[in-house]
Length: 333
View 1 (cartoon, rainbow, N blue to C red):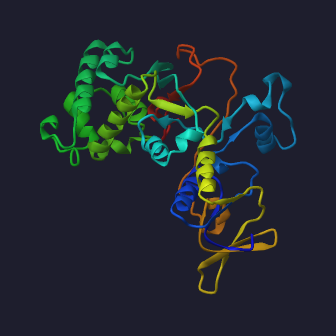
View 2 (cartoon, rainbow, N blue to C red):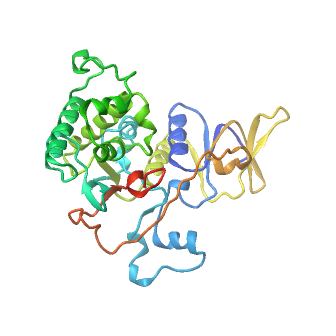
View 3 (tube, helix red, strand yellow):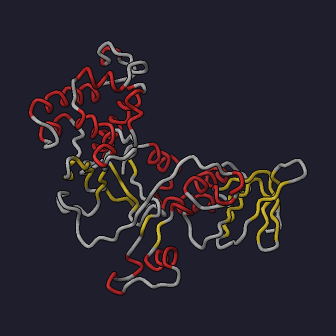
């Protein structure tokens, strides 16, 4: 470890591993360390034994839950848009050869006490129980507008400049009611609060188009895909890319301390009495807690279920969005 590197990366979260892989491909000498004995950092996927160790100390998981290896529990659960930026990054960097994906069975939204399938096209809107007959017609017209919209084709804009027109103004043009706006904004465009309503409509339209394009890409029941063995597979794939191009990995390295010189510039990292020198350090926030500024909080819960979620057609994997207005909250669940 007592060597000099171009870059030292601390933490094996997705961002850190992507950067480690790209820097190694670019010919830089990279050392990548993590205090944990597994990849993924805060976004790792744990088996049952690891999960119980993390949250219950020395307790062991109940025997009736089955084999620990059959579980990959995401610490930060997320799905990937099938036609989204991350998928394009995976394809461009060729790390897809290290990964297997599964299409997620469905996307759903909570409305008036029930779970409903999210309509993503004009035809699905006509069949959706989320809307009455006349509202379906209005929603269908809106969906057709979104599907036809092209940045470089003014005739598809219908006289509106979506960089100036707000989402609220665009929706008002089609006379959509609050419930429809709720699932469009939160279950299709995936906004987490209602600030988007007073922002330019272009972002919301692009988000809706991405949803529909992702839905069509694999002809599945949802626009989402998911790594077969959990999200922890993603950082591992980029770690393998880094290793192929000469990156050095060290897991289970305790107390990684970032060192600074007299001018306050980073000059290395010390762990277990050894110091690796470097010109740059990339790290997750937990390695430099005195430089972190808290800007928000996220509440998460992990529930191990013994049955499918009701009203989801007995699907094995789904995303259910609970919009803020349905819960009386300031943000979605």
